Length: 401
Image (tube, rainbow, N blue to C red):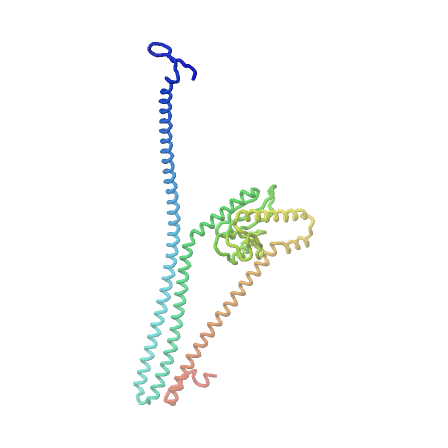
């Protein structure tokens, strides 16, 4: 250490600052510096702990709000389902009350019939015991017939109650699937954002509720703003694939006048892992690594077809234009719509014919049973009473011809 001099503030004398003299001063300064560093570290740690606590509190508040909103949505859906179930149960109770009223009327009519039969027995006590047994047998047959009719009504009521119970379970499942609907909307927004970011020249618009169907309509445009066609996207985020989606999307495609329709789904049909064409509809996985290449391929295909059509503009005759229309996608979509509508009408008609035939056969059998019982009862009484029994119109030979 080189000799350093310091000046005494009292006598102005110079003092050499040797290593032995400066050592204690340096040690004290070092201790004071280390204490300052330790104090600053403690304060820094304290502030960091306070920031971590505030961050945890904010995260808990946000989480609680999200859970509260989700619980509110579930409660609203459950209340709607309960209200609908209550309304349907009220309607069912009204139907059951009506059926009980009709049953009471039938029982009253049966009681009146029994009363008249007893009056007839009192008026004709001279008739033999055989007549009384045969009349009682006829009454029993009529009672059984009436009971069969009531039993059928009870079975129909039980079937309606079973259908309502099943419908209630379906409503409960819909209430539990409220979160799945929100998840589907999140996927739809994600796909819309990917399309807008990847294809800035195209018009990417969500399809409004109550319009022609689908979720996203992509209007393909070149860099020169020329419209080349439309792609109708349908987003699905469910656990199971439904074949009914294809027919609905084809109908929506015709309404939207789109050249291509595609379903982006989490669940894939049998035989398709990432991408495929099923009945003219493009089906692909919701994975971004699959969805974006498929979207680019479909878009390039529309641009190529439009470029080919542009080259032939002005060079085609009416016959050629008609041929292009007949071989193009729009004419195919029109024919498919007609065929699907006709097939649906034919299927509904077949079902109605079968249902009406079953009802007619059932009623014809019931009428035959009642007529057989009435004719048998009249024949038994007529065989005993003879000509003293008044004739009934419709049971003579002339009436049976």
